[in-house]
Amino acid sequence: MIDEKEYIKRRKDLMSMMHINSIAVISAASEKVRSKDTFYPYKQNVNLTYLSGFQEPESVLVLIPGREEGQVILFCRERDPLREVWDGFRVGPAAAIKKYDLDDAFPISDIDDILPNLIEGKDRLYYAIGKDPDFDKRILDWVNHVKSQRGNGALPPGEFMDLDHFMNEMRLIKNAAETGVIKKAAQISVEAHKRAMTFCQPGIYEYELQAEIEHQFNKSGASGPAYTSIVGGGKNACVLHYIENKDILKDGDLVLIDAGCEYENYAADITRTFPVNGKFSTQQAAIYDIVLEALEQAIEVTQPGAPYNVTNETTIKVITEGLVNLGLLQGEVTDLITSEAHREFYMHGAGHWLGMDVHDVGDYKIDGEWRVYEPGMVVTIEPGIYISEHNMRVEEKWRGIGVRIEDDIMITKTGNKNLTSGVPKSRKAIEELMIKI
Ligand code: GLY
Ligand code: MN
Ligand code: MN
Image (cartoon, rainbow, N blue to C red; front, side, top):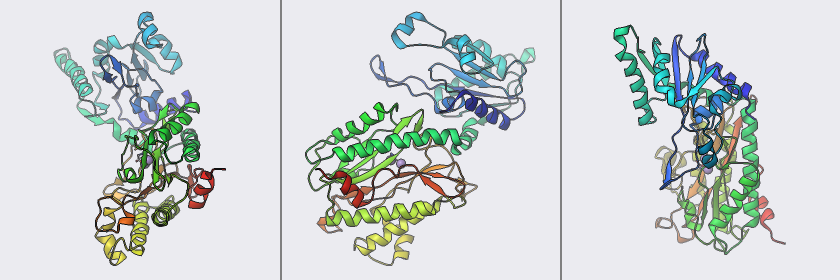
Protein backbone atom coordinates (compact mmCIF):
# COMPACT_ATOMS: atom_id res chain seq x y z
CA MET A 1 0.00 0.00 0.00
CA ILE A 2 1.17 3.51 -0.80
CA ASP A 3 0.67 5.49 2.41
CA GLU A 4 1.02 9.15 3.41
CA LYS A 5 4.67 8.70 4.39
CA GLU A 6 5.43 7.50 0.90
CA TYR A 7 3.75 10.50 -0.72
CA ILE A 8 5.63 12.86 1.61
CA LYS A 9 8.90 11.18 0.66
CA ARG A 10 8.17 11.45 -3.06
CA ARG A 11 7.42 15.17 -2.78
CA LYS A 12 10.56 15.67 -0.72
CA ASP A 13 12.68 13.75 -3.26
CA LEU A 14 11.25 15.80 -6.13
CA MET A 15 11.78 19.09 -4.30
CA SER A 16 15.38 18.13 -3.51
CA MET A 17 15.99 17.86 -7.27
CA MET A 18 14.38 21.20 -8.05
CA HIS A 19 16.36 24.37 -8.54
CA ILE A 20 16.67 26.74 -5.60
CA ASN A 21 13.95 29.42 -5.76
CA SER A 22 11.65 27.45 -8.06
CA ILE A 23 8.03 26.28 -8.22
CA ALA A 24 6.35 23.17 -9.65
CA VAL A 25 2.71 23.13 -10.76
CA ILE A 26 0.91 19.81 -11.34
CA SER A 27 -2.65 19.84 -12.63
CA ALA A 28 -5.41 17.24 -12.31
CA ALA A 29 -6.63 15.49 -15.45
CA SER A 30 -9.77 16.94 -16.94
CA GLU A 31 -13.01 14.98 -17.08
CA LYS A 32 -13.85 13.64 -20.54
CA VAL A 33 -17.35 13.49 -21.98
CA ARG A 34 -18.28 10.02 -23.21
CA SER A 35 -21.82 10.67 -24.34
CA LYS A 36 -23.84 13.85 -23.97
CA ASP A 37 -23.80 14.56 -20.23
CA THR A 38 -22.12 11.34 -19.09
CA PHE A 39 -18.39 11.00 -18.60
CA TYR A 40 -15.70 8.38 -19.00
CA PRO A 41 -14.64 6.95 -15.64
CA TYR A 42 -12.32 9.58 -14.23
CA LYS A 43 -8.59 8.86 -14.43
CA GLN A 44 -6.40 11.22 -12.42
CA ASN A 45 -3.18 12.62 -13.88
CA VAL A 46 -0.77 9.85 -12.88
CA ASN A 47 1.89 12.30 -11.71
CA LEU A 48 -0.58 14.01 -9.37
CA THR A 49 -1.52 10.59 -7.98
CA TYR A 50 2.17 9.72 -7.65
CA LEU A 51 2.90 12.84 -5.61
CA SER A 52 -0.24 13.02 -3.46
CA GLY A 53 -2.77 10.23 -3.99
CA PHE A 54 -5.36 12.99 -4.54
CA GLN A 55 -8.08 11.68 -6.86
CA GLU A 56 -10.46 14.59 -7.48
CA PRO A 57 -10.68 16.50 -10.77
CA GLU A 58 -10.36 20.30 -10.81
CA SER A 59 -7.33 20.39 -8.58
CA VAL A 60 -3.75 21.67 -8.83
CA LEU A 61 -0.79 20.70 -6.66
CA VAL A 62 1.96 23.29 -6.14
CA LEU A 63 5.42 22.56 -4.72
CA ILE A 64 7.68 25.39 -3.62
CA PRO A 65 10.88 24.00 -2.06
CA GLY A 66 12.21 26.08 0.81
CA ARG A 67 9.12 28.30 1.16
CA GLU A 68 8.86 29.16 4.84
CA GLU A 69 5.07 29.58 4.90
CA GLY A 70 4.64 26.12 3.40
CA GLN A 71 6.08 24.08 0.55
CA VAL A 72 3.13 21.88 -0.45
CA ILE A 73 -0.09 23.58 -1.52
CA LEU A 74 -3.24 22.12 -3.04
CA PHE A 75 -6.03 23.89 -4.87
CA CYS A 76 -9.19 21.78 -4.90
CA ARG A 77 -12.98 21.98 -5.10
CA GLU A 78 -14.86 23.26 -2.08
CA ARG A 79 -17.43 21.13 -0.32
CA ASP A 80 -20.79 21.40 -2.09
CA PRO A 81 -23.63 19.43 -0.48
CA LEU A 82 -25.83 19.63 -3.57
CA ARG A 83 -23.17 18.44 -6.05
CA GLU A 84 -22.01 15.82 -3.58
CA VAL A 85 -25.50 14.27 -3.67
CA TRP A 86 -25.06 13.74 -7.41
CA ASP A 87 -21.34 13.18 -7.91
CA GLY A 88 -20.00 12.01 -4.57
CA PHE A 89 -17.83 13.22 -1.75
CA ARG A 90 -15.45 16.16 -2.10
CA VAL A 91 -12.83 16.50 0.58
CA GLY A 92 -12.61 20.32 0.46
CA PRO A 93 -9.49 22.41 1.20
CA ALA A 94 -9.70 22.40 5.01
CA ALA A 95 -9.93 18.62 5.42
CA ALA A 96 -7.48 18.03 2.54
CA ILE A 97 -4.65 19.63 4.53
CA LYS A 98 -4.89 16.99 7.22
CA LYS A 99 -5.84 14.04 5.05
CA TYR A 100 -3.05 14.57 2.50
CA ASP A 101 -0.40 16.07 4.82
CA LEU A 102 -0.28 19.40 2.99
CA ASP A 103 1.02 22.72 4.23
CA ASP A 104 -1.91 24.67 2.85
CA ALA A 105 -4.98 24.30 0.61
CA PHE A 106 -7.27 26.76 -1.15
CA PRO A 107 -10.47 26.58 -3.20
CA ILE A 108 -9.71 25.98 -6.88
CA SER A 109 -11.91 29.00 -7.65
CA ASP A 110 -9.23 31.21 -6.03
CA ILE A 111 -6.31 29.88 -8.07
CA ASP A 112 -6.16 32.82 -10.53
CA ASP A 113 -5.77 35.23 -7.61
CA ILE A 114 -3.30 33.20 -5.56
CA LEU A 115 -1.05 31.28 -7.97
CA PRO A 116 0.48 34.31 -9.79
CA ASN A 117 1.64 35.56 -6.37
CA LEU A 118 3.30 32.20 -5.69
CA ILE A 119 4.96 32.22 -9.13
CA GLU A 120 6.17 35.82 -8.77
CA GLY A 121 9.86 36.10 -7.94
CA LYS A 122 10.69 32.45 -8.77
CA ASP A 123 13.56 31.88 -11.19
CA ARG A 124 12.26 28.63 -12.59
CA LEU A 125 8.83 27.08 -13.17
CA TYR A 126 8.43 23.31 -13.61
CA TYR A 127 5.37 21.81 -15.25
CA ALA A 128 4.39 19.16 -17.83
CA ILE A 129 5.17 21.31 -20.86
CA GLY A 130 3.03 20.61 -23.93
CA LYS A 131 0.98 17.73 -22.49
CA ASP A 132 -2.33 19.56 -22.21
CA PRO A 133 -2.90 22.65 -24.39
CA ASP A 134 -5.49 24.05 -21.95
CA PHE A 135 -3.08 23.81 -19.04
CA ASP A 136 -0.22 25.29 -21.14
CA LYS A 137 -2.47 28.28 -21.73
CA ARG A 138 -3.40 28.63 -18.07
CA ILE A 139 0.28 28.58 -17.08
CA LEU A 140 1.01 31.31 -19.63
CA ASP A 141 -1.96 33.32 -18.36
CA TRP A 142 -0.62 33.15 -14.79
CA VAL A 143 2.90 34.07 -15.92
CA ASN A 144 1.57 36.90 -18.08
CA HIS A 145 -0.36 38.16 -15.11
CA VAL A 146 2.94 38.40 -13.20
CA LYS A 147 4.52 40.14 -16.21
CA SER A 148 1.71 42.68 -16.26
CA GLN A 149 2.69 43.64 -12.70
CA ARG A 150 6.30 44.35 -13.67
CA GLY A 151 5.67 48.06 -13.18
CA ASN A 152 5.13 47.24 -9.50
CA GLY A 153 8.43 45.34 -9.38
CA ALA A 154 7.01 41.85 -10.00
CA LEU A 155 9.47 39.32 -11.49
CA PRO A 156 8.21 36.51 -13.77
CA PRO A 157 10.19 33.24 -13.95
CA GLY A 158 12.91 33.30 -16.59
CA GLU A 159 13.07 29.53 -17.10
CA PHE A 160 10.52 26.83 -17.79
CA MET A 161 11.48 23.19 -17.23
CA ASP A 162 9.65 20.02 -18.17
CA LEU A 163 8.62 18.40 -14.91
CA ASP A 164 8.05 15.05 -16.61
CA HIS A 165 11.77 14.54 -17.05
CA PHE A 166 12.19 14.40 -13.25
CA MET A 167 8.97 12.51 -12.60
CA ASN A 168 9.78 9.85 -15.20
CA GLU A 169 13.11 9.00 -13.61
CA MET A 170 11.55 8.81 -10.15
CA ARG A 171 8.72 6.59 -11.33
CA LEU A 172 10.98 4.23 -13.27
CA ILE A 173 12.63 2.86 -10.14
CA LYS A 174 10.09 1.22 -7.86
CA ASN A 175 10.68 0.94 -4.11
CA ALA A 176 9.47 -1.83 -1.82
CA ALA A 177 6.02 -0.28 -1.28
CA GLU A 178 5.47 0.01 -5.02
CA THR A 179 6.69 -3.45 -5.88
CA GLY A 180 4.30 -4.76 -3.22
CA VAL A 181 1.37 -3.17 -5.03
CA ILE A 182 2.58 -4.27 -8.48
CA LYS A 183 2.92 -7.83 -7.17
CA LYS A 184 -0.69 -7.69 -6.04
CA ALA A 185 -1.81 -6.36 -9.45
CA ALA A 186 0.14 -9.20 -11.05
CA GLN A 187 -1.32 -11.82 -8.71
CA ILE A 188 -4.91 -10.74 -9.39
CA SER A 189 -4.18 -10.83 -13.12
CA VAL A 190 -2.63 -14.30 -12.81
CA GLU A 191 -5.80 -15.62 -11.18
CA ALA A 192 -7.91 -13.96 -13.88
CA HIS A 193 -5.93 -15.61 -16.70
CA LYS A 194 -6.19 -19.00 -15.00
CA ARG A 195 -9.93 -18.50 -14.66
CA ALA A 196 -10.29 -17.73 -18.37
CA MET A 197 -8.14 -20.70 -19.37
CA THR A 198 -10.24 -23.02 -17.24
CA PHE A 199 -13.52 -21.58 -18.54
CA CYS A 200 -12.58 -21.71 -22.23
CA GLN A 201 -14.24 -24.15 -24.62
CA PRO A 202 -15.20 -24.17 -28.30
CA GLY A 203 -18.39 -22.29 -29.14
CA ILE A 204 -18.17 -19.52 -26.56
CA TYR A 205 -17.52 -15.92 -27.58
CA GLU A 206 -14.35 -13.91 -27.11
CA TYR A 207 -16.28 -11.47 -24.91
CA GLU A 208 -17.14 -14.29 -22.52
CA LEU A 209 -13.46 -14.79 -21.77
CA GLN A 210 -13.10 -11.02 -21.38
CA ALA A 211 -15.99 -11.16 -18.87
CA GLU A 212 -14.34 -13.98 -16.91
CA ILE A 213 -11.08 -12.03 -16.74
CA GLU A 214 -12.62 -8.71 -15.77
CA HIS A 215 -15.00 -10.31 -13.27
CA GLN A 216 -11.95 -11.69 -11.48
CA PHE A 217 -10.25 -8.27 -11.58
CA ASN A 218 -13.16 -6.47 -9.99
CA LYS A 219 -14.05 -9.08 -7.40
CA SER A 220 -10.41 -8.99 -6.26
CA GLY A 221 -10.41 -5.26 -5.53
CA ALA A 222 -8.82 -4.03 -8.74
CA SER A 223 -10.34 -0.89 -10.21
CA GLY A 224 -10.65 -2.72 -13.56
CA PRO A 225 -8.44 -3.44 -16.56
CA ALA A 226 -5.28 -1.33 -16.86
CA TYR A 227 -5.91 -1.24 -20.65
CA THR A 228 -8.64 -2.60 -22.89
CA SER A 229 -8.51 -6.39 -22.68
CA ILE A 230 -7.56 -8.19 -25.88
CA VAL A 231 -9.22 -11.55 -26.56
CA GLY A 232 -8.49 -12.74 -30.08
CA GLY A 233 -9.38 -16.20 -31.36
CA GLY A 234 -7.75 -17.70 -34.48
CA LYS A 235 -6.63 -15.06 -36.97
CA ASN A 236 -7.78 -12.25 -34.65
CA ALA A 237 -4.66 -12.99 -32.59
CA CYS A 238 -2.65 -11.53 -35.50
CA VAL A 239 -4.22 -8.10 -34.95
CA LEU A 240 -1.91 -6.76 -32.26
CA HIS A 241 -4.45 -4.47 -30.59
CA TYR A 242 -7.63 -6.43 -31.37
CA ILE A 243 -10.22 -5.21 -28.85
CA GLU A 244 -13.54 -5.97 -30.54
CA ASN A 245 -13.66 -9.34 -28.74
CA LYS A 246 -16.89 -10.27 -30.52
CA ASP A 247 -16.18 -13.48 -32.45
CA ILE A 248 -16.96 -17.08 -31.62
CA LEU A 249 -14.03 -19.22 -30.44
CA LYS A 250 -13.62 -22.20 -32.72
CA ASP A 251 -12.52 -25.75 -32.08
CA GLY A 252 -8.97 -26.13 -33.39
CA ASP A 253 -8.06 -22.42 -33.05
CA LEU A 254 -5.80 -20.73 -30.56
CA VAL A 255 -6.99 -17.79 -28.47
CA LEU A 256 -4.70 -14.95 -27.37
CA ILE A 257 -5.60 -13.05 -24.21
CA ASP A 258 -3.66 -9.88 -23.34
CA ALA A 259 -5.14 -8.46 -20.14
CA GLY A 260 -3.96 -7.01 -16.84
CA CYS A 261 -5.65 -5.22 -14.00
CA GLU A 262 -5.00 -1.88 -12.37
CA TYR A 263 -4.73 -2.24 -8.62
CA GLU A 264 -4.20 0.81 -6.40
CA ASN A 265 -3.05 2.73 -9.49
CA TYR A 266 -0.45 0.14 -10.62
CA ALA A 267 -0.80 -2.02 -13.72
CA ALA A 268 -0.12 -5.62 -14.61
CA ASP A 269 0.18 -6.79 -18.23
CA ILE A 270 -0.04 -10.49 -19.09
CA THR A 271 -0.51 -12.34 -22.37
CA ARG A 272 -1.19 -16.03 -22.77
CA THR A 273 -2.09 -17.92 -25.93
CA PHE A 274 -3.71 -21.35 -25.65
CA PRO A 275 -5.85 -23.76 -27.66
CA VAL A 276 -9.60 -23.15 -27.48
CA ASN A 277 -10.16 -26.91 -27.09
CA GLY A 278 -7.21 -27.44 -24.74
CA LYS A 279 -4.96 -29.28 -27.21
CA PHE A 280 -2.27 -27.73 -29.48
CA SER A 281 -2.11 -28.82 -33.13
CA THR A 282 1.29 -29.67 -34.64
CA GLN A 283 1.70 -26.26 -36.31
CA GLN A 284 0.42 -24.34 -33.30
CA ALA A 285 2.81 -26.26 -31.04
CA ALA A 286 5.78 -25.52 -33.31
CA ILE A 287 5.11 -21.77 -33.31
CA TYR A 288 4.22 -21.72 -29.62
CA ASP A 289 7.45 -23.40 -28.58
CA ILE A 290 9.57 -20.83 -30.42
CA VAL A 291 7.80 -17.93 -28.72
CA LEU A 292 8.08 -19.61 -25.32
CA GLU A 293 11.79 -20.28 -25.85
CA ALA A 294 12.26 -16.62 -26.86
CA LEU A 295 10.52 -15.49 -23.67
CA GLU A 296 12.47 -17.84 -21.43
CA GLN A 297 15.86 -16.93 -22.89
CA ALA A 298 14.98 -13.22 -22.74
CA ILE A 299 13.99 -13.46 -19.07
CA GLU A 300 17.34 -15.14 -18.43
CA VAL A 301 19.36 -12.23 -19.84
CA THR A 302 17.24 -9.47 -18.26
CA GLN A 303 19.57 -8.89 -15.34
CA PRO A 304 20.82 -5.90 -13.34
CA GLY A 305 23.70 -4.35 -15.27
CA ALA A 306 22.59 -5.70 -18.66
CA PRO A 307 21.62 -3.13 -21.31
CA TYR A 308 17.90 -2.84 -22.09
CA ASN A 309 18.25 -3.97 -25.73
CA VAL A 310 19.72 -7.36 -24.80
CA THR A 311 16.16 -8.52 -24.05
CA ASN A 312 14.82 -7.56 -27.48
CA GLU A 313 17.88 -8.91 -29.27
CA THR A 314 17.54 -12.26 -27.53
CA THR A 315 13.91 -12.60 -28.62
CA ILE A 316 14.84 -11.70 -32.22
CA LYS A 317 17.63 -14.28 -32.30
CA VAL A 318 15.49 -17.13 -30.94
CA ILE A 319 12.53 -16.27 -33.18
CA THR A 320 14.66 -15.91 -36.30
CA GLU A 321 16.37 -19.27 -35.64
CA GLY A 322 13.03 -20.91 -34.96
CA LEU A 323 11.43 -19.57 -38.13
CA VAL A 324 14.42 -20.77 -40.18
CA ASN A 325 14.13 -24.24 -38.65
CA LEU A 326 10.48 -24.39 -39.66
CA GLY A 327 11.25 -23.14 -43.18
CA LEU A 328 9.21 -19.98 -42.68
CA LEU A 329 12.33 -17.87 -43.22
CA GLN A 330 15.07 -18.87 -45.61
CA GLY A 331 18.73 -17.92 -45.37
CA GLU A 332 21.57 -17.52 -42.86
CA VAL A 333 20.36 -16.56 -39.39
CA THR A 334 22.97 -13.79 -39.01
CA ASP A 335 22.01 -12.26 -42.38
CA LEU A 336 18.32 -12.51 -41.54
CA ILE A 337 18.90 -10.78 -38.20
CA THR A 338 20.82 -7.98 -39.96
CA SER A 339 18.05 -7.50 -42.50
CA GLU A 340 15.38 -7.69 -39.74
CA ALA A 341 13.58 -10.45 -41.63
CA HIS A 342 11.71 -11.38 -38.44
CA ARG A 343 9.59 -8.23 -38.81
CA GLU A 344 7.29 -10.05 -41.22
CA PHE A 345 6.20 -12.23 -38.28
CA TYR A 346 7.34 -10.35 -35.15
CA MET A 347 6.66 -6.67 -35.75
CA HIS A 348 6.81 -5.19 -32.24
CA GLY A 349 9.50 -4.75 -29.62
CA ALA A 350 10.06 -7.22 -26.78
CA GLY A 351 8.43 -5.12 -24.09
CA HIS A 352 8.22 -1.90 -22.11
CA TRP A 353 8.51 -0.45 -18.60
CA LEU A 354 5.56 -1.28 -16.36
CA GLY A 355 4.22 0.75 -13.45
CA MET A 356 1.47 3.27 -12.89
CA ASP A 357 1.04 3.46 -16.66
CA VAL A 358 0.93 0.13 -18.44
CA HIS A 359 3.46 1.50 -20.92
CA ASP A 360 5.26 3.23 -18.12
CA VAL A 361 7.41 6.34 -18.22
CA GLY A 362 11.21 6.36 -18.32
CA ASP A 363 13.79 6.72 -21.06
CA TYR A 364 15.09 3.60 -22.76
CA LYS A 365 18.29 5.33 -23.86
CA ILE A 366 20.53 7.84 -22.12
CA ASP A 367 22.78 10.02 -24.29
CA GLY A 368 22.10 7.70 -27.21
CA GLU A 369 23.12 4.53 -25.30
CA TRP A 370 20.72 1.82 -24.14
CA ARG A 371 20.17 2.23 -20.44
CA VAL A 372 21.18 -0.53 -18.09
CA TYR A 373 18.72 -2.53 -15.97
CA GLU A 374 18.69 -1.50 -12.31
CA PRO A 375 17.04 -3.06 -9.26
CA GLY A 376 13.50 -1.69 -8.89
CA MET A 377 12.75 -1.50 -12.60
CA VAL A 378 9.77 -3.53 -13.80
CA VAL A 379 9.60 -4.55 -17.44
CA THR A 380 7.34 -6.68 -19.59
CA ILE A 381 8.78 -9.27 -21.94
CA GLU A 382 6.36 -10.23 -24.68
CA PRO A 383 7.71 -11.91 -27.82
CA GLY A 384 5.24 -13.06 -30.46
CA ILE A 385 4.86 -14.63 -33.88
CA TYR A 386 1.91 -13.62 -36.06
CA ILE A 387 1.37 -15.30 -39.44
CA SER A 388 -1.15 -13.34 -41.44
CA GLU A 389 -4.00 -15.26 -43.03
CA HIS A 390 -3.04 -13.36 -46.21
CA ASN A 391 0.62 -14.44 -46.22
CA MET A 392 0.88 -16.38 -49.49
CA ARG A 393 4.63 -16.86 -49.00
CA VAL A 394 4.01 -19.57 -46.41
CA GLU A 395 2.16 -22.86 -46.66
CA GLU A 396 -1.53 -22.62 -45.89
CA LYS A 397 -1.21 -24.72 -42.72
CA TRP A 398 0.69 -21.86 -40.99
CA ARG A 399 -1.67 -19.05 -41.92
CA GLY A 400 -3.75 -17.31 -39.26
CA ILE A 401 -1.67 -18.52 -36.32
CA GLY A 402 -0.85 -15.77 -33.81
CA VAL A 403 1.01 -16.35 -30.55
CA ARG A 404 2.24 -13.89 -27.91
CA ILE A 405 3.36 -14.74 -24.39
CA GLU A 406 3.98 -11.92 -21.93
CA ASP A 407 5.32 -11.85 -18.38
CA ASP A 408 6.08 -9.02 -15.94
CA ILE A 409 9.66 -9.06 -14.70
CA MET A 410 11.01 -7.14 -11.72
CA ILE A 411 14.75 -6.46 -11.65
CA THR A 412 16.27 -7.24 -8.25
CA LYS A 413 19.76 -6.73 -6.80
CA THR A 414 20.75 -10.27 -7.66
CA GLY A 415 18.73 -11.06 -10.78
CA ASN A 416 15.07 -10.83 -11.55
CA LYS A 417 11.70 -12.04 -10.36
CA ASN A 418 8.90 -13.11 -12.67
CA LEU A 419 5.73 -11.68 -11.13
CA THR A 420 3.38 -13.50 -13.48
CA SER A 421 4.86 -16.99 -13.67
CA GLY A 422 1.73 -18.30 -11.93
CA VAL A 423 -0.19 -18.52 -15.21
CA PRO A 424 0.75 -21.77 -16.95
CA LYS A 425 2.79 -21.30 -20.10
CA SER A 426 4.40 -24.61 -20.98
CA ARG A 427 2.18 -26.54 -23.37
CA LYS A 428 1.94 -29.39 -20.89
CA ALA A 429 0.87 -27.12 -18.00
CA ILE A 430 -1.74 -25.42 -20.18
CA GLU A 431 -3.16 -28.70 -21.42
CA GLU A 432 -3.30 -30.03 -17.86
CA LEU A 433 -5.16 -26.96 -16.57
CA MET A 434 -7.62 -27.07 -19.44
CA ILE A 435 -8.47 -30.77 -19.24
CA LYS A 436 -12.19 -31.10 -18.62
CA ILE A 437 -13.13 -33.98 -16.33
N1 GLY B 1 -1.18 -4.75 -23.42
C1 GLY B 1 -0.40 -3.91 -24.20
C2 GLY B 1 0.95 -4.42 -24.28
O1 GLY B 1 1.19 -5.59 -24.07
O2 GLY B 1 1.87 -3.68 -24.48
MN1 MN C 1 0.05 -6.88 -22.92
MN1 MN D 1 2.84 -5.23 -22.70
